[in-house]
Structure formats: C-alpha cells, structure tokens
Length: 354
Image (cartoon, rainbow, N blue to C red; front, side):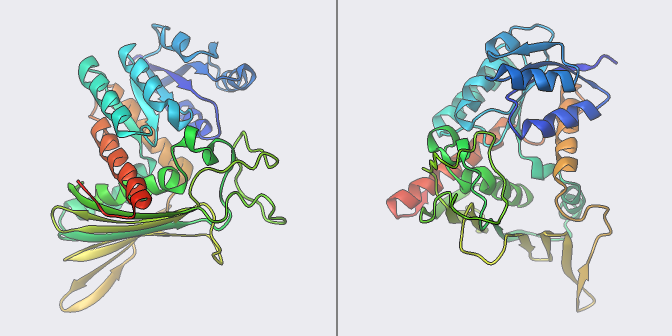
C-alpha cells in the first residue's frame, strides 16, 4: 500500500503534535512544510525529512504529490487555506476552530460539497482513548437519554498572548480556543442535538496579566510582554438549550482569580452519568443500588499527544477509504454557529434563538 503524502501548513506550537503523529504513522510520508517564517519551516522539514519547504501555502498546494494537508495557522486564515486546499484536490485536517464566522464556515462547507474532497475538523478530544471507551457505553444505551452536561476549563493565568490575544487573528479568547473543545465534546456525546437557544456572557477584566512574577504559563510563539496586546475575553460562560429538551452549561477562562487551574466535564443520562475529566468514571444503578464504575485505563484522563496520534490516524484512515471522518465539516459549521451566538448573546445581553 502506498503512503499518503502529507503537507503541513503552519509551524506554530500546535503543529508539533501533528508532525509527531504523522511521523509515527507508517502509512504517512511528510513531504511538504509551509510557514511564513522560512527558517521555522526549514527546521521542521529537516526534523521530519520533508523534501519541500514553502513560505506561500499556494505553492505547497500546487505540488501534485501532496494528497492531504494539516492547516495549523492563525484562526483567521483557516477558511481561505482550507478552501484553497480542497479546490486543489487535497483532503484537509483543519485545526479547530474551523474558522471565525458563520459565512466563512458555509463557504468551507460549500467547497467540500463541490470538490468531493473531505475536511476533518480538529476536535482532538473526540479522539481521546477514554472517550472511545465511554462512547461504547453510550452507544450501548448504558447511560440512557443524555439530557444534561456541564463543563469547565479554568486557567487562572493562561492567556498565551501573541495571536491568541489578538481578536482579529484568533476570533476570540478562551471560548473559541479551549471552550470549543468541551462544547463540541459534550454536544458529540449527547448525540449532536439541534440547538434551540444560546445565552452567554463574556468578561474582559484582567487582560494578559504579564506583570505576574514567579509563575510560569504557556506563551504563544509570538508572545511579547512589552506589547501586552489583548482584545479577547478573559472568560466566558454559556447555557445552551437543545430542541430535544437537553441542556449544556460551560464556563472557560484564560485568566481568573481562581485558586488553581481546573477542568471538569460531566454528562448525565436517565440511566447513568459520567465524569470525563479529570478521569473517566461512570455512575449508574444496579439492583436498587447506586454504583460507581471506574474503567481501568492506561490513560483515564485526556492524553494530549495520544489523542493527537488517534486523531491523525483517523484522518489518514479516512484518506485510505477505511471509514468516513467522525468530525466532518458539518460539525464545524454547527460549532461556529454556536460560538458566534455566544459572542452575540454576550454583546447584546440577550438570548439568541436558532
């Protein structure tokens, strides 16, 4: 079987997880790398034995050997690059979020439909090993009808600065960066019900907090403490109601006066519930007794690189025709509609109905 020849567009921090996963897959050959900074692209190409280095993604897409691409660029370029890649005959793995606006999302969906190629949205948490286990319980009906979910990802000092804090390039802050992961995961596990309404709040009170000393935090590749640019929200919360009566509550932050960073994702059905983060645990009833089930897993929580490996393997198997992607463009469109509705709700101080 011939290998799928892959190109990676964008060599920022998240790209390393893509490169590593592609390199670990025996069905892949990384043949092309592109970044606005040639030295950064060349370093990745040398590390992963890619023959072709570009600073213009159009030149990469013109390479007829490239069959599939990962788009790992700023959020405001996801749509244009993905559309160009699809129209160049490539299958696409686009990092989340799919894009910034609903209009852009619909254009990407149109390109998928017209080209016959496919786009997988980078919802990496769908591919975590503990989610694969939980999905078997859900699909078997062990949790029954899932009618409520709640999730929280709190960073007390976690605004990465750089492009992450520039709304023009990112489209927003923690909601569109990390909130998209948990909203999507809950929605996915709930069976992707149709949204009825969204009511959200955003707050911008603290900014980058670059003055904080003696505490390390993740910084974007283009982090600049002196510039201290911040046009995104510090935190956001949202209540999403679905047409089937189910609901989802989420709160996320880049920066908050909290005692510690924390993460929690829970779903609840009429036959059982599950705590997903920090580790998977299932609660249910047997013989009139409440019981907790703790699946014995090598990684009971979210394994960052392991999930990326699974995501890339899934993408490559889709390229090989073994299955269709479980994160299609349609799901990306729906998530952009939800995220934009949260920002609209917060700006207008009212519920947005779908």
